[in-house]
Amino acid sequence: GENVEQHPSTLSVQEGDSAVIKCTYSDSASNYFPWYKQELGKRPQLIIDIRSNVGEKKDQRIAVTLNKTAKHFSLHITETQPEDSAVYFCAASRGGSARQLTFGSGTQLTVLP
Amino acid sequence: EAQVTQNPRYLITVTGKKLTVTCSQNMNHEYMSWYRQDPGLGLRQIYYSMNVEVTDKGDVPEGYKVSRKEKRNFPLILESPSPNQTSLYFCASSDLAPGTDTQYFGPGTRLTVL
Image (cartoon, rainbow over all chains, first blue to last red; front, side):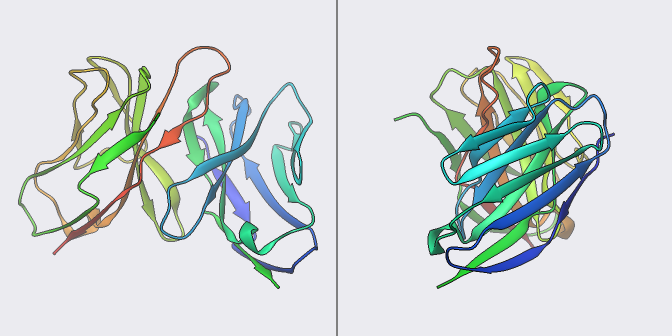
């Protein structure tokens, strides 16, 4: 089955700096890669996703890149703000179905003012 | 308002006492799923359903049951809870139409089994 590894597990950055979180996956059939943000005590919420036919996608201060050959994808947050502090999860579809998601173990991002 | 609801939000119970966590969505989504979240392990899928009367196992189905008798509801049943099922549980739903892969999560149910 699919296995998703996420690094780092914790990340602290100064406000205004960039943050990068990396994930690798094992199933070459995976074709959908969402990123979720979970604030303390809240539910996970989708912040950006990418499909295997696209190498990069941007939405304001966040971007995701995908390298299918190397089987890794990354989340980039620029100009970080204190409200970006949260746990971020990457996920990969299993067997080509966009809803059979395997999640990474999460990254606790702390943005220091 | 489009939403996924879960009840109860918090539950403390004892080993062996059957319990049900309800999940309901008002978005007419075909797909519904249950996850459990444990520290350091992320979210792991328990069961999912592609439509009414269609359910299948996820990664960690042992000790759980589900049913999908109505499109909007997808209850999670623990017939004989054990302490290793203490966890935070999330229900999620999404559409099945192409390009509508976003899963909407419920608010979570924190379960403690003593």
